[in-house]
Length: 219
Image (cartoon, rainbow, N blue to C red; front, side):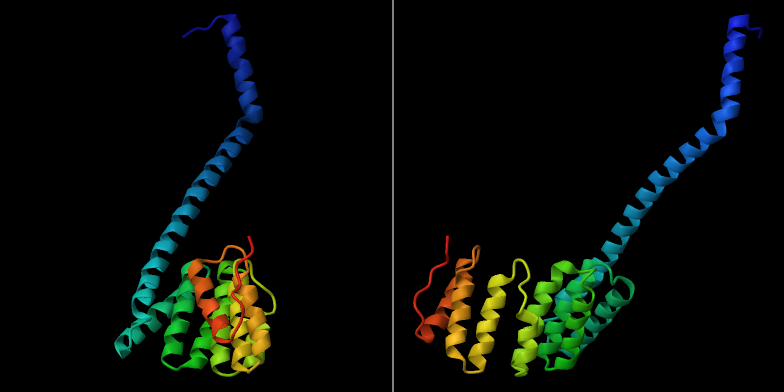
């Protein structure tokens, strides 16, 4: 097919432009496509990892209150897989907290402490679980009468756990017979903004038993 002179000039200019910029343009398109595919691939992988982690977490969640040895073995196996293969996933951290409760209920304080320390050591992976892990470990230490170790976990409040930490500090003081300090901490706990009515009732009961005044949370 023959082209007139003007059309031929346009074609020649297009060919020249493509020879100069075509490879670069193709490369840029390829980079963009690879980035898009990589983004979808990463999201698919994350979703796949989360689904698998959730399946193992469900096993831990359904067995940590059970008392039989078969359930404990299932919990141990599922939790170990989570820690080995999905340690960066939030369900691994949650499973460790539940496993710690199961071990503590069975009197295995050493294993319970190990699970809680695992969460604390992974603060960069599970920052949202630090408050719960510290509170749980402080409770374990208090039951063992390791009061200094318990206090060391509660000296710096974690956002959202201020009232719970104060309440636990009160429990520790009470366990040591320091009733005035216990009253102060419990009073501080119920005056923390945003605490639930159930929490206030529970702590108020402790205050009433020790003769504390009827505190009300500050508005």
